[in-house]
Each structure stands twice: as C-alpha cells, then as structure tokens.
Image (cartoon, rainbow, N blue to C red):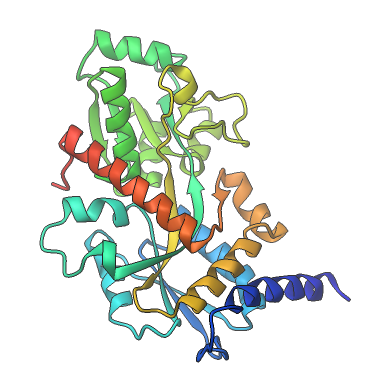
Length: 326
C-alpha cells in the first residue's frame, strides 16, 4: 500500500466517523461533485494561501475537487452574501476571518446577522502577529519602545493591515494596556505595510509573521514581540507581549471555514473532520510552517466557542478604542 493510499484511507475513515449516530443521512453520497470555497480575501494573501494548502490536501479524502473562488469587497460582505445566496446543500462554504467578529459592530445596515447566518465549521489557521520597527529605530526591545512612546506621545507611526482588522485591534489593545498613544497608519494589506517599513517611511508595523519576513530578511526591520500567548516556533527568541508585562495578551490574525446556517450538520462535521486530519499532513506543514502559520483544524463546537469569546473581546476593544471603518 502506498503512502498516498494509506493517507487517503486514514482521512476517509476520519471523515466518515462523525456521520455515525446522526440517524438517517439523506446526504450519504456527499460529496458527489466539486465543492466551492468562497474566500473573502485576495489571492496570494495569508488567509488565501492557508485555505488553498488545506483544500488541496482535503480533496483526496473527500474524493472531489475543492474550487477556490476569491470574492473580495465590502469588508468581506460580498463573499458572505454570495455564500448565503447559494443552496445550503454542503457544496458552498465561506473562508472568512475577523470580519465575522468586527462587522456586526462596525458595519451599518448589514443584510444579515453574522451570529445566526453562519455555522462555524473549523478554524483553518492562526497567524501570530508581530510588533516590528524599522532597522534604525532607536528602541531595541518592547520595553524601550514603550518608554520612547511615553516620551514622544502621538509621534511614532505604526502600520497595520487593514483598518479595523485584527492587527488594528491588537495595536489598540496594546496602546490601551501600555498607556501609550501611537499614530495608526492603516494599509490595504500586510505586503503594503511591509514595503513601507522596508523603505523606512513608517516607524513600526503590527503585521503577521508571514508579512514581516521580507523586510526582516533584508535587514530593514527588527521584531520586538509577538502578539500570541505563546512564543512562535519559527521565532523562538522573540518574546511575547504577554510575557513582556501584559499577561494574557493574545490577539492573532486567523481564518476559518463557515457554512450558511441550515447546511446539514453531518456535512459540517465531515468537512471539519477532514480538515482536522489535513492540517497535520506533511505537505500542508511544509507550506505553512515557514510562514509562521499555526494550523488548527478544530471541531465545529470548539470553533464556535472560540468565535463567541473572540467576538466579545473584539467588541470590547472596538468600543474602548473608538475604532471605526472611516
């Protein structure tokens, strides 16, 4: 038996198991045609890359292609709406991220309620973020950065992608807890922020471990801390914000798979089970580990509970910091 055949057998077994005990399952032949994942982000970004890596591995277990469709715009509302307008038969899923937490607070006149319109399937990945400074910035540590910010309130510029994204929320939470005032510079994406810190036109950035790699590799930026609760395996010598005097600090970028509410629960569980196996595949790890991504692949229940806690935390940061999309 080949390694590929063995992996398929393991995956297929893991996928089929959750269907047991759910009674008559009218969708027992699912999937019998390609599955569509509507990605709310542009091709080539961190969320898109993680989704494509996972989908490519899951196709073998599911026996059908997973077609990635990038639908950007409207602060991810375009992709969400397209998902909700599709049949709820287990052949259309949404790859979304922090918009699930922030849009209900920030976007007026939403055509749907995120809380009831979507069913969390599985968290695909977590992308720890970093606070990094340009190469000639005087602070060499997070403590020195904070001290300098207190000496020069409102003068240190920090770029994040985008406005009201997880990086912006992490920056606002950090400012509040550190008692400092920075100048926020919103960017369309992490690559744009990385480009500007490489050029020295912004003092600092708060972006993902993946986005910061080019300027760090070029010697044009230095990482001071990571936003995750634990140190990042790819950056073992970089301290966390939590261990640097701010216990419990844990605000990362992430993405996950969602289904429109009403999608058969057994299909949701089978999709999550397939993802749970695929995230551990060597091909996925080889692609995502160097970028600092932490692949998750948890159960629908675990993901739903995590989303609920994150939604509360995000709403509190937005209210406290007065964050808007404008």
